[in-house]
Amino acid sequence: MPGNAEGVDFTIEPVNAYHTAYISVGSNMGERLENCRRGMAALIRSGRCRLIDQSCIYKTEPVDYVAQHWFVNYVSKIETTRDPFSLMDLLASIEISAGRVRDGIRFGPRVLDLDIIFYDDLIVDESRLKIPHPRMHERHFVLKPVCDISPEMMHPVFRQTMQSLLNDLDKTGQGIHKYK
Image (cartoon, rainbow, N blue to C red):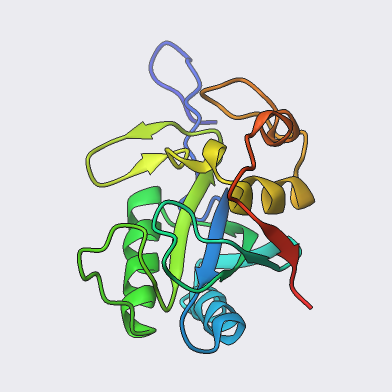
């Protein structure tokens, strides 16, 4: 039985302990749906990640930078043994492998966009990583797919359910339709 001289138990998380993460998947260039599918397949093939659930697939209107094609978006729920920073780095490398170029147009067109929306109920506020995703509560293309999977999940900062955040969202200019 683990413990110290005073008999206090220590709980040590196993190296292979799984964490739950929600990943927003999107593309608005080329074969949009295929880009998304290949990106998620690369994530699962990389090891230490397994797909648990996936939302419906949506065709969504661009937000902020609107002079571009509509997106294909969905959310995947995964279990991973990767820490949040390792997962973020992996997602970035998958985006680059898919042909994503960061050309300075914020919210501009992209071959593949993979974002961590949630990682357990963790709150991270670092310059290179913010969890929960800082704009997810403003995005119909994120909230609707998350609600497909976990409408009663609580946002760890706002202390509201996903369904409540979706219900309160001003959806003006955020068109969303089921894909095919």
